[in-house]
Image 1 (spheres, rainbow, N blue to C red):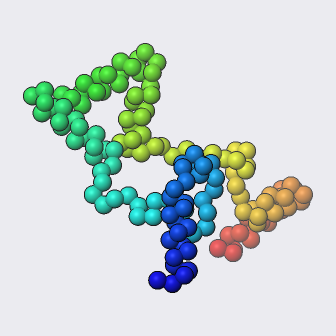
Image 2: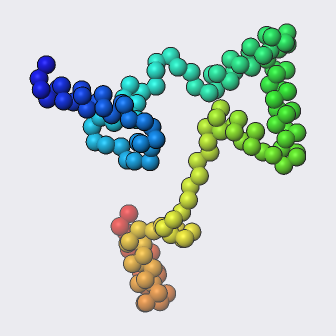
Image 3: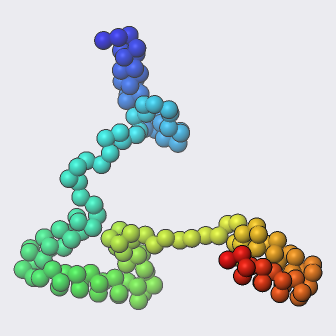
Length: 145
């Protein structure tokens, strides 16, 4: 084994000896960092949705009932909690099973419509030249198409 590879392996061993407390809050280093998951999620591992439905099936089997009855009971519980003002149970369940809803936030235009630069110039010309420019620009737009 070359000296370079030995040094890299020694470095990896030293990094793995560090505690999480020492490494937490620090940005990842270039190259090897013990906090990274280089292998990714293990093959065959199950997501929340699959585990949830398997659990519901187990509960149904254990209580000698059908899956739909357990699901109805969960919905009833969620409804009761929501009626009392606690939507967390329902929201968390929906977010984990169906995915979190996409929220779009406009940070740049303050609600105004984004237009092309050419459209902005056209509107400026209309303001400066008056109504005559509006009829001229509309006819030139139709000719351009």
